[in-house]
Image (cartoon, rainbow, N blue to C red; front, side, top):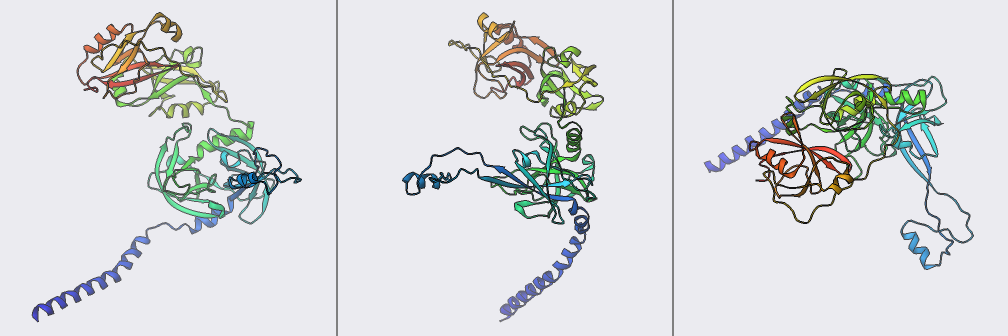
Length: 482
């Protein structure tokens, strides 16, 4: 009986403890909620300057012959979404519609959105928060930064305040206002997850990554800081479903405004270039070149007759500064140079042969479209050599291969042993070996094998490779094949 009472008492105490916890938890939660920001005032002040954009496009689809509705093929085409024209029916081009967001940057009707929102548009309509509707003119669009400038004919309009994305900090609260899934003036909130994100095929934009809920229709809408200033333009999401998955990317507003100002003044965007091909400086590359830390942009090749070539920039140089500004990664260099007005002279800080030097380069204008060369490869002989200390089977280039590749010297990679880590493939041509800032031209397979044999086990070595029309640096450690 005593044991039963003890059990009853213990159970009662658990109930009391649970009840106490249930009562105390809301109080604690209220204390935590008190520290959260209040977005109501921001929404009231800034939402009038946010617009929704409706785009109409004439659907370009193939023509079909006239088919009667009782024809068996009529049902076949209908099931696959291609409705053939019934006999006697007039030809009519169908229309496709899409939605996006934008925001006003001036009281006289200039507004910004994403270039992909209005790409191929036959008609663009802008709907203001006060329900007024205007037809918009696309002043200009730039696909490389995904920015478009639009104009509506109106006066005394609300406009946003422009902020400084450089002052944004990771963890800071930000909010978006837009038209996700056609739902106008929707606000969502989150934090800055990262800054300066590099995305594939988007090397001119250092994206702001957030966890703000962004969905189709938010594209082109503003990203605000807590001061109510626009710091970015919501542009991309990472998604496997087509909807929000916690990763959203915004174009920094300073990048956008640089594009907008040129579109407004000239109707197009001009960018600077210096005529170099570059790659990232990894730790192994830094070790091989004697650079104190991995930073900068490694020059793979220099365009003959281009600005860098005329100034004296060479392959294997590492550009670490532009006008005193640090180049922290290879992706930063094109962003810095493209922002420079063509014809301007800049000073490059160059790391060459273990020492820093300065070279003045006059920036040229980047063409709108740059054709990419198709890679070629020399033929690989059938009788392959034995792998060397690095796990590479090397052979001398034939005179025919040298002529085809326009090389005076070089060593062909016939095979790569299993376990070799590094971007080296059969058919590559080794042009030079780089170790601790010293560059040795690759003249023969015997010479390269002997040079590698003298290096310490575990040392990083950089190889200047030729692959088709491209040259680049690949680094591997001498024991990586073991």
